[in-house]
Image (cartoon, rainbow, N blue to C red):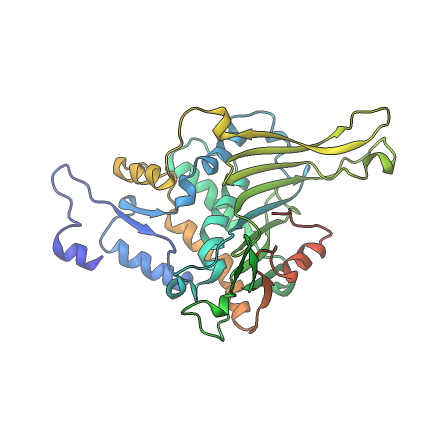
Length: 362
């Protein structure tokens, strides 16, 4: 930033503007994020700083706000009275590729949870803003992030692991410690899962489970809102043994859309109820092509429209959530190993099982 200032590129002339785009991650912990912020602010005012997170430019991420606030049917059930828990997932079927120099020492939580997944949590849980202006949206996201806490013991509320060798897509792939440029004693996680609570009236008692990992069974990013069981079912157990919990699943990638899972009677003479899905797919419902996330965000930079860019307060609140987890993990040593092409480490399944729940299958 000092070099931009020294060269004169940061100076605003008559009627001209200067804006700087900062790519995530914004630091590697709270202290470094604050230091980075101080450095940038010595040269640029806050309104000229655009902290870019390409996930916020995806149409399906923005559709979370449209789904919630443009439709009357969802708001009455978007709360602790009806929601059992929320699962936010970003799974990748690839390894680290040639990114060893960046990834090792950063890990899955800093790379994805601190930014992408906590932003998805904020958009899912936030209250309705007074408008879609930058200040209104950012204010509601900041309220949610400031209310997030890790419940109980970090040993039971978090899980992490490293991918080991295995079969994926019919190919034998190597484990993380065998990747080029990775130290054999690396303790960097390639899978991370955390359980979070939100201390406010809407979400009290509703856990949010966040998970991300590499070399998993398939590539998928989604927000799944899982609803409570009906308080009374006037059917026998055999009628409903194949019935799960209702769910609203917002798919960010790769098959962008929304799925509603609910129970329906199976055709026939007997009363048998089974889960079925009702799907909305972007590609089938709209003829317009969605712009790439970076296309949308860079256009917003040029026109100076910042609603989809997190401000520094959001960045710092996210690090305040993650820093204690990272400090705890740093003191633990060896990580769980999980086979490439699978669903992640056993410790992640145990995290859910302690609450009597299971992850959605990838």
